[in-house]
Image (tube, rainbow over all chains, first blue to last red; front, side, top):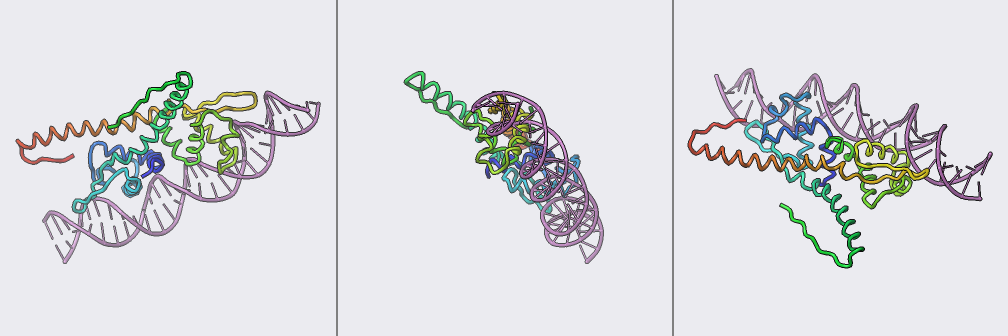
Amino acid sequence: MTYQAALTVLADPTRRQVFERLRGGPSPVNAIAAGLPVSRPAVSQHLKVLKDAGLVEERSEGVRRIYSLRREGLAELRDWLDSFWDDALLAFKIEAERSHRQMKRTRDVDE
Amino acid sequence: MTYQAALTVLADPTRRQVFERLRGGPSPVNAIAAGLPVSRPAVSQHLKVLKDAGLVEERSEGVRRIYSLRREGLAELRDWLDSFWDDALLAFKIEAERSHRQMKRTRDVDE
DNA sequence: CCGCTTGGTAAGTCATGTCTTACCGTAAGC
DNA sequence: GCTTACGGTAAGACATGACTTACCAAGCGG
């Protein structure tokens, strides 16, 4: 999914609570909804949106639906954010190149 | 500002366009609004929101208002995102330890 | 087989936020 | 001075989306 979907989806506070609740590990809907200030159907709807955005995944266990975090869903958003620093870096490089004739090439690594 | 403010503010597509348009460097309101599908006042409103969230800054040049990117405004959001991967590391350690323990004990799993 | 739990979906209400037009103050140029 | 470009703010229209209750299907245990 796109970083834009992640942004849109994580903008809602309640939905963010749902999402954060999965940090602790996979959980059925009931457990997620318990302690949240909204009804269980509301949580269901949030989970659907999160799933469509690729931020959570769902597996069935009997009558239970177990939801868990999909961290890969955050990757694009993270890249997008990083790209702003890349911009700054690029501008810096150009500036540096203008003053020095030679530029050393740098390479980033990722995990 | 908080990562939550950044999320909320960047969720809107038009506002994101305004924000991205500042990647190229500082710009007065007119230049930002040109080419966008919304009116100039709409852009003004978006800029106000972005400024309140600490994502842009404003300086006056005569009658012009020059807006520019504040990358530090994205820092908290980036940290928040990173923290999910930290979670994963931690969870992995815990999980490893638990499964190790499980080899000596009987099955007892819940959350 | 029957009831109970789990949870997804429908329909409708209500709030929020994004837009518009109209208006205003302010700086610069003639 | 007067006019013109720049842009912030107000007020109101409108759409979107987050909630509610009611309902339904599916698996499990008595």
